[in-house]
Image (cartoon, rainbow, N blue to C red; front, side, top):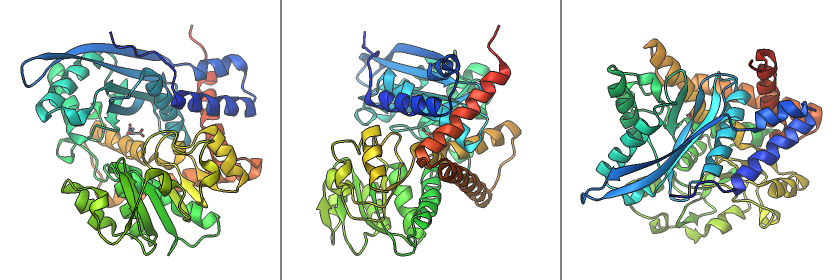
Length: 419
Ligand code: GLU
């Protein structure tokens, strides 16, 4: 049986940030213990028929960290290094993300230990449908609503929605978000994370005394989040000087052509094939002297080991836990303004919330309205986090955690402990 219970750097980061907030808020230790714990988790081992007729057993899981504010919400990740500990950490982040931007959701995360690139489309479909069936015990529009994450996208969400609908005997569009628009997906969902990052990054640049027009930015990660962030930052007048993916990246002081790089990747090319720019490694990209750095790849990229060599003035954390606590402290000493993950990358779950509401009501907003309302939520949340950070003289991360943890604590207290 695949071993899934082990620690993870991401879980340590999630717990550190929570523990600090609980202490700063002087939460009753028994209440803190309730909020720190995972409410429910389901581990499943299931067979999938491969295209050659053989069977392969996969391990998947769904973790619901906390549902005090509403149904559990969060992505499903397909990644060969996925662990239960990572899912626990990422589910905790989802609880705080929903709370900090004011959504009526709890936090969840799930995934499968698999390299999706090694599967054919039919194998991915069978894996997704069987996973959905295994997890259906705890899923549903008023219970737990999955969404895309690393290694999954609208197609997987369509298979999940169809599988749950086949079981129910009628279409249940609100059972999953990030679906294709034709079956009830929200307009603007695909670029929503990048749009949210861009909104708060521009505010943070201004708050650091940097004019966004002509400011420079480097983006680590060129998947869904990184590429849409690069496009939207460029559209906002920011000079994107470097981007990278898992194979490395490119740098040009004059700025790189984000549209050309996106087209290159869509055609299956490597970023390194782009002419007119120097190649850089992922580590070199993180060290570039830029106004804005946006890590949009995996966790723990900026740590005690390399944070002293980071030369950015503002960092917007596109990826969850891209900066570890030691990295945080080093950057704080150097006055680097960090917009934390639980605020910076909430654009996806905000538009997921819109999508869920649309599906429940069978009434949809046009793209312009979705984007405008997303912007409103991001600006309001950023301003609240910034105001608290200034009045309490704490970092944006500490402030965001305090706001989120205090809210879930208040909900738990007023509901009371059953029975
Ligand atoms: N996986 C995304 C996240 O971690 C999306 C979650 C959602 O939309 O429910 O924020």
